[in-house]
Length: 192
Image (cartoon, rainbow, N blue to C red; front, side):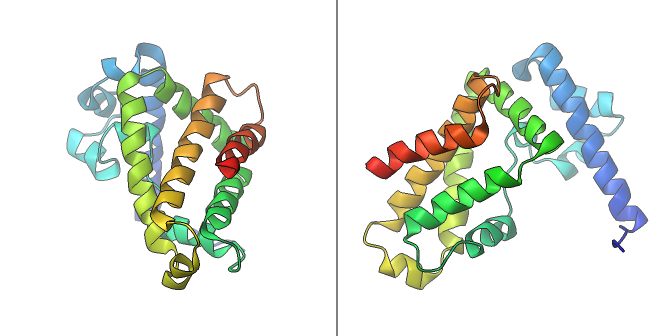
């Protein structure tokens, strides 16, 4: 038997979802740059402060940041004996394998907006660096010390590969399997 959310949490989740769906519809209809936070809030039936209570910026709708807990869970699932590069690679592939159905379609829609918006392509690099910091923080100190290569460099390159995977997948309109694109990009990274 599943645990049901309390009414306040359910209302917050419903509001968050309504803002997200409204923003995505507006971005797809008019383009990311042409839609303001105020327009999203009005169309979603919320105030601008309520929008910001759910999303730090409109960029965070299409480029959501993972939480430290999500990163930790993905890395914890990787065998501890693996070098940093293989642990991060495994975490990336695990994350992609968890994206199924509607969630996968939403990720594709978001990244299609990113690849067609120059501003978001640049912001993706900033989000990539912030995520790399979360990954580095989540790696155990002993794993970083045992690494034959610089863990900062390995994680940064791996997160750049992650961004490239999603961009290439979106540019192809999702016509190729995400996992196939991932294997192709990560294979190049392994040869470096």
